Length: 173
Image (cartoon, rainbow, N blue to C red):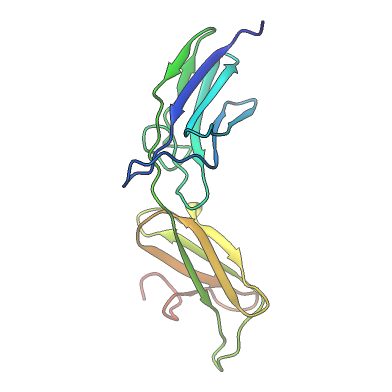
């Protein structure tokens, strides 16, 4: 018999309260990541975790990653401390639906640019939290899994100045 600690919870949609039975919940410590996948009921559990301190978050398509206690970043995440044989229940999550930003990057003559990176970060956060994606062969980009909010969006193309959405060269323009 393997002894350890356990965590169980449900994941429900924030607006409707509907159980979410896709994706995964991740628990991690300094040494390892552990993944739990839903039962058909939207119930997740870790049955045998080594004792220790863990951060736990959801990873579900079309939803914002959510750390325990409604946080959105590992730095803000609450730490769960588990003792041998301890079982925590009701560590529930209600992630928000995510959004996306898409578009086409063109040069001054209207031709699509096919090489570069588009970044987006919330106006209330720092660039360190930016999401990024590469332009495709048609100059298109798609940034997904974005939390609701206002964003700075800019493109970085080799040999050109960084250009923010609206064809400006800084956030203050």
